[in-house]
Image (cartoon, rainbow over all chains, first blue to last red; front, side, top):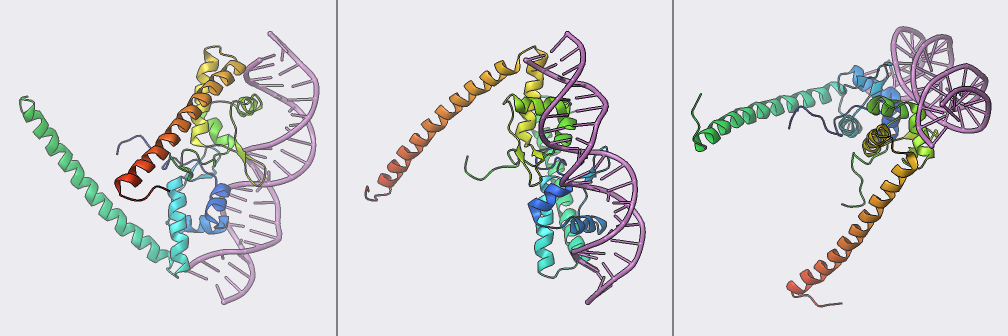
Length: 112
Length: 112
DNA sequence: CGTGTAAGGAATTCTGACACG
DNA sequence: CGTGTAAGGAATTCTGACACG
């Protein structure tokens, strides 16, 4: 809900740990990055770092792959989800501004 | 609140990442384990794995060390906290059982 | 007591490539 | 297309020890 990031989003897990967590091979994990399905950050030394959120996405990818969905189709699905989320975020931001105005009026303060 | 563990408690962070996150040297982190202040688990390969909760505790330890508190004093403080928490957990479990009985009665079911 | 460091080995991760299909 | 593997190097982690204070 704000600029601070939670445990879930913090990218601190190495590819080896992610492999254990997801059951995917390191090769697969790197390949899904190459296909733009997942976006790890890099440590100072250049090692990939993943968040729990990334781990969840990888499990979702693994499930879709089992159903025979191709990586480019999966990418499309995520793109659609992203667009929908962005739309909702914008909507909420506008609502927030309106609410702020309303609160100001209720408190008897002057409009600026 | 239950047997499933959250992102915060999941031990998946390597000592190198913990070092970056806390600003402590790996030597210090291992030493605090030796002194029973922190309890990482081990990966298949024998590497230490920490949770976000562990990272927070290490930051707390670092602050106390800066104030000159000795590691055995810090251990004592944690032991006291632990005892208090255990006492509260027991209390809540008893409350839970009492509530369960009460609910059963309210729903008109027979006592067993 | 708390922390640094050099030591040597074992395991991890990285990239670019060849393989199969 | 998706994944396995061998290759060689660089960085990580581990333990037990010596050092200083």
